[in-house]
Amino acid sequence: MSVIAFGYYGFNNVGDDQLLTETMAILTDLSIDNPIVANGPATISYPSFNRWNLLSWVGQLIRHNTLLFGGGSIFQSMTGFGSLLYYAVIVQLAYACNCNVMLLCHGWGPFKQKWHERFAAWTLRKACRSWRLPPPACFYSDPVFCDLTLTQPLPTISKNASGIGISIRSAEMAAQVNHYFQVMGSSAPINCNENKLIAATWYSNHTPLELLVTDRLHSAIWASRHGIPWVGISTDPKLMHIANQANQPCFSTIDHFVAMFNWTAIDGKHLQHWVTTHSKQRHRIQKWLHEHISH
Image 1 (cartoon, rainbow, N blue to C red):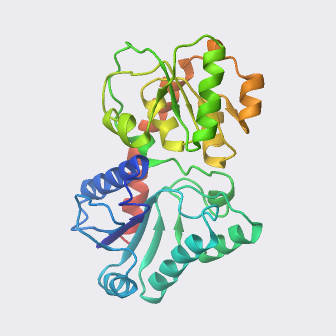
Image 2 (image 1 turned 180 degrees about the vertical axis):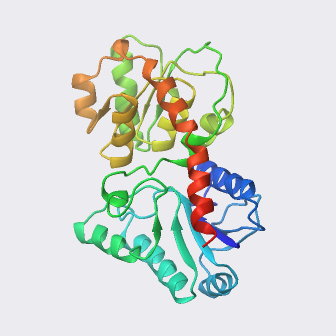
């Protein structure tokens, strides 16, 4: 079997880099020979080709028999319909080249328009969808698709945490969260730039924080892996979904957060059980992939 791994890879995004690492590890465990990655501008440590070159795509799709989406929220339109259209074009090229399309684990949405979601579902109508749920539920009922980073081996954590972290895209919102904790009498929160602190401690057994406030999916997953309680401020269905699963609070706006959140009452007791359960799903993913990629 020959596989092209495709996702939001090669953009220096910590979460998506970890998705690629786990995708390639699973392919290696299944003895898939020489998988190649459709890559962005950043350097990666796997054989790759330029994701923006359609001629390269045609050549690779002819030579390989499986296009594997291994993770990342690429089927969405919040960053623009053009992004969704690009991925749809690649899927159609794969169909035209008789290359199987498989959705291993990936996010779904959010979409600016309902017809964008219908368009994405129609584009993937012939794909082998989700290792866990049959269609159409795998699109509409499970926005996380069991993120592969949740299946990675967990670090052994040493509980020497101190400090509150903020991992939020908007500088304005981050400043408001910072102000909230200062008013509450906390020490100044730590700015958790996702590509620095989180990247450096993804596999570490050190717990650098006692609480994380975030609007990022993989920041929340990182915190969960380290047993760090977290609170979300987002309407992203993926973050809301795992907040519900992990029993962590998630607010739709900063105003709701300020009005309703009591940070002294939050704990991470549920997190260890939740992430341990997910980390044991890896063999199920391997089994599903082995069964479908060999046909």
